[in-house]
Amino acid sequence: MADRFPSPFDIPTPEGAEGWQDLYAYSSLFSEDRREYEDSMFWFQDGVHWPQVLTPWDATFFEFAITSLSQYNTRHLLVPPANGIDYRILNGYAYLTPVPAPEAEIGARVEQFMQRAGHYFMNWNDLYDKWMVKIRDLVAEMEALHIEPLPEVEDFEAVVASGKGSGSGYALIDAYYRLLSSALKLWQFHFEFLNLGYAAYLDFFGFCKQVFPSISDLAIAKMVAGVDVDLFRPDDELKRLARMARDTGISDAFVAGNVEATSENLKATDAGRAWIASFQESAEPWFNFSNGSGFYHTDKIWIENVEIPFDFIGNYINLLNEGGDLARPVAAIHAERDRIVNEYTELLNSDEDREAFAGKLGLARVVFPYVENHNFYVEHWSHSVLWRKMRGLGQIFADAGFIAEANDIFYMQRHEVPDALFDLYASWATPAPARGPKYWPAKIADRKRIVSALKAAKPTPALGVPPEVVTEPFTVMLWGITSDSVAAWLGGGASGEGGIKGFAASPGVAEGPARVIFSADQINEIQQGEILVAPLTAPSWAPIFGKIGATVTDTGGMMSHAAIVCREYGLPAVTGTGFATSNIKTGQRIRVDGSNGTVTILED
Image 1 (cartoon, rainbow, N blue to C red):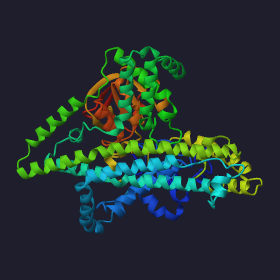
Image 2: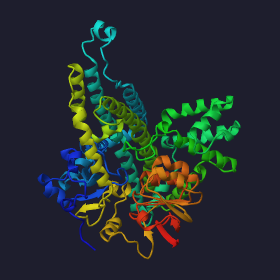
Image 3: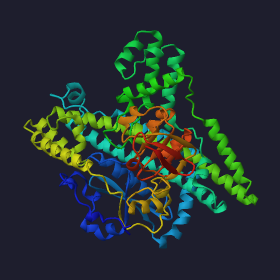
Image 4: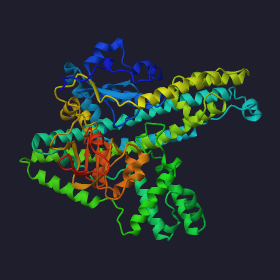
């Protein structure tokens, strides 16, 4: 077993991907200028949020997100032990490293953190209500941005007679800068509450570990389970629409895999037309939902790919017709939650400890819904709007011959887009030939070739010097990076005689044939009773939970979205196995023990 991971400076460029560095901002790359620092740190590939190669513009959200996270740790809240997360891109993949605060500063930061975090905790409901207004207003601002082609001639009344004093070229360039500014503001909003949500849970977690030394991580997580959050609303809307179809007698209108035929059938009856109207009411905003993490322009959005929600609704209708129950097992989750809380409360020996336990648990339950809710409002709804606006801009470039198709805009870096826009604007203003149609097509074709070569190579899971013990709580609970997983990576990832190990993420035991999938496009392959094995899951995969017996993922810790969603749906899950998709094959019968965090291959 090696004692360290490869240096980032020793990782070769995949064949055919030479020059990949030109796809990304200079500051996001490993470099000789920072080698002493970069080679001394432990970097892990973030497969929870960015499991795939980043195209140039998609890297924008990666950089905005991680920088905003760190800003709140260091400049807003002064989290005592943590200065945030540093980031790099290597061979197209996202790498992170936790940056601890200097030992000498921790004591001085405690008082300021208590004041700042305490203000939020004491005023959580009021501030969170204001956050909901802010995020909806921001979405509305982004929706209202006009990204339109340059006209042949400016309108007389609107531009000339009104004395407006500026034209369409300025408006187009301004709209892009405003879109980019809105995206950065969005990520500022994202972390206003998220770090505090985790902090409250981690405070409760630490207290439980102190007073109940033998308590499991899963038992603590179950004490805050049974939350009602907006992240589940898209799935709830699918179920509502399925029940409506059954109750109004239009189930037969749904033709599996054929949205067009289904729509024609529905339009033929009053009940069907009423159902379509109800679907459209649900679609905004709840079907602004990505089938992936929301961080890639290639992710499919339900509202733009209605075959996805239609297929889910059709499956739910079939389940209802077979006498199935679509409801999440909320009552059972609440009963188990209360049982565990009462059991551990009785173990406490003093009123002081009981009061502290109740107080920390109460705070964790108040703030915990945000840990999931933000995911819908930021990564899904807001990102859906941003991707659409960018495609609109891409279509303008495509119509002008700068690029072949709208999605090619995502092969430009965010700071290259204004240069291309000004080229377009200048050629419209003069008019004279723009350079773009001769410059961009070849460059983007070369970048596509490089991205394809990068995708063909698997990323190294970690780089640099591993810590003796992984103690940074976010790294453990969200990303699933532990001393054990680090040791497994160093050992090459082979599973031992005890089977594949991971986090006991959601309780229960299930056996069944494995279904290994690597993307949302494969969801329709899943059969009733199979066990889902995937690198990670997305919240939008929840509609398949009625089919599967359990979930196993390569990435993610106890507080990853996959773990939380599985607990809320009563589905056994083991997360953060590291190598499940490599060691398990579709069709193998496996046993998933979500209470102990083990996966056993029973037979081929």
